[in-house]
Amino acid sequence: MSTRLRAALSAVAGVALAAGSATAAVLVPSTASAATTVQCQVTYSVGTDWGSGFTTNITIANVGTSPWTGWTLGYSYGGNQTLQNGWNGTWTQSGKAVSVTNASYNGSVAAGANTGIGANFTYSGANAAPTVFSVNGTTCTGAGSPTSTPSTTPSTTPSTTPSTTPSTTPTTTPTTPSTTPSTTPSSPPPSNGAPALHVSGNQLVDSTGKAFVPHGVNRSGAEFACVQGKGIFDGPVDDASVAAIASWKANIVRVPLNEDCWLGESDVQSQYGGAAYQSAIESFVSLLHQHGLAVILDLHWTDGVYTGQSSACSVATATCQKPMPDAANAPAFWSSVAGAFKNDQSTIFDLFNEPYPDFAAGFNSAAGWSCWQNGGTCTGITYQVAGMQSLVNAVRGAGAPNVLMLGGVAYSNDLSQWLAHEPTDPLHNLAASWHSYNFNSCSSSSCWDSQVAPVIAQVPVIPGEIGENDCGHSYIDTLMAWLDSHHTGYSAWTWNTWDCSSGPSLISAYDGTPTTYGAGYKAHLATF
Image (cartoon, rainbow, N blue to C red; front, side, top):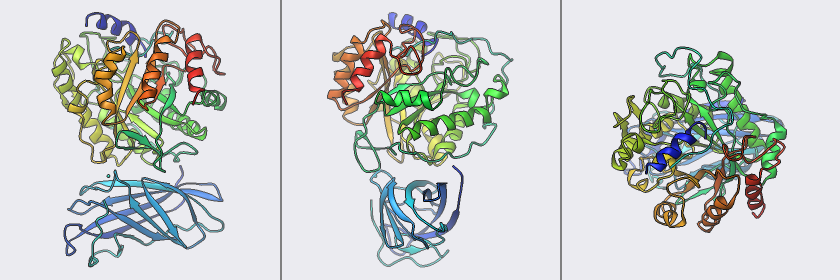
C-alpha cells in the first residue's frame, strides 16, 4: 500500500534454459464425429536439467477449426526417464510410454487456443527429447485419418504507506506509452519445491488435487523504488531474507510490480527498468520458489492521468495507484509477464491491485462495476481503461494458464457484485482478490457474511492484503478466525521495515524480528 492510504481513508469517510525441444503436428479426432479431424501442435521443452533429473514443459495447441472437449497426450522416451510428478493433467507412465489426460479445468481447448502441462522426471545417461506424439490415439504424422472411436475425455480502502513517500513527479517528461514491451522476457524455471496451483470449484488446489490455503506476506518495494530512481527493491531480497519469511510458516508471497518499470518506459532509469527489472523479478520469484513459496505477481502502479476522487498523483506515469489499469499499456504488461511465467504454475497473477472506479464515478457502484468488467470510456476517468476481461484475454492470449486474481471495487474491499461481473475465462482459473483493513467500509463480520461468504461459496477468494493501522493485531485476529472458519487464507501487508501504523509493517528487521502487529500474525501462522 503506498500513498493510497491517506486518500483512501478520506474516501471511506465520505462513504529456465531450454535443453531439448520437439514440435509436431498432431491430428486429433473431433469428439463430435469420428469422421472429423482437427489439428494440433505439441511443443516439448526441458525447462531445467540438473544432471539426474529435469522438468519438462509441454504446450498442446489446437491449430484446427473445431474446439476440443477432452484430450489425452501420449509419447515415449528412448532412455530411462522416470516420472516423479506432473501438473495440469493426470500423468502416468508404463515402461518408456508416458500418457497425460486433461484435468477437469483444461479439457476444453478452443480452436486457436492452447494449454500447458509439465512434469518432473529423473534419469541417468542421455536425455533425448521425444520426437513422436499422439493426441487421443492419433499419431503425429501430418494430414491423416482419424481413429474410429474418438476420445471424449472431459474442466475500501487499501493497503499501507511506505515510510518513504513515493514521489509524484517523474524524473523525465512522460512520453506516449508503448503498446509492446521493450524486451522479451525469458521463461523462468518452473517451481522448485513450490506447489503448482489451479482452481477446482471454489478452492485452490495443487497438482495432486490437495487444497492449498494461502498463508503469506506481501513484499513491497518493486512497485515504487524503480520509478523513483532508488533501485528495484526496498530492502534485501537475498536467501537469508527469504528464509526468514519461510520461517514464519508462510507458503506464499505477494510481489507488487510497476507497469513502467517492467516495460522499460522512458520515465524509468535504464538500470532499473526493462530487461534489468524483468531479470530481477524473475530471479526473486525463482528464489522464493526454492524455499517452497508460491508467488503472487500484482500489477500495482499503472499509467493514466487521473485527478478525480481519491487521486494520489496527477501525472500520467506509474507513480501512484490509479483507479483502473490503462488500456495503453496494461494489456501489454500482462502479455509480457504471462509470456515470462506461463510455464510456472506456482505463480499467480493478480491483475490489478486496488480498483476504485466506483469512487471515480462519484461513488456510483453500477458504473464502477461496469467499468471494472468492460473498461473503455469510464465515468470520471480521463484515460481509456483496460477492463478485467481485456486483461484476462491478454494473459490467455499469451498462452499462460496461471491462476488469475481479480480484486473488486472500492480498493478491492467490495466483492458484492464480483460474481455478477466475473469475466469469461476458457480455463475457469479465476479467483477473487479481497483486501481487508480495519479502516475499510466492509470491516465487520456481518459485512463479511453478506458480501464475502457468497463469493467464497462459488470461487476461491484470496485476501491478498489484510492489516490494521493501529500497530496491534486485534482486527486481523478476528478477521483470520473468520477466514479460517471458511477455509480461506490470507496475505498480510507487509514484509518491510516501515512504521507499524503507516505500513502497517510486520517486521522491524529483515531477519524476521516482528513488530507488535507482526507478532500477532506470526503467532497465528504458527498454529498451522
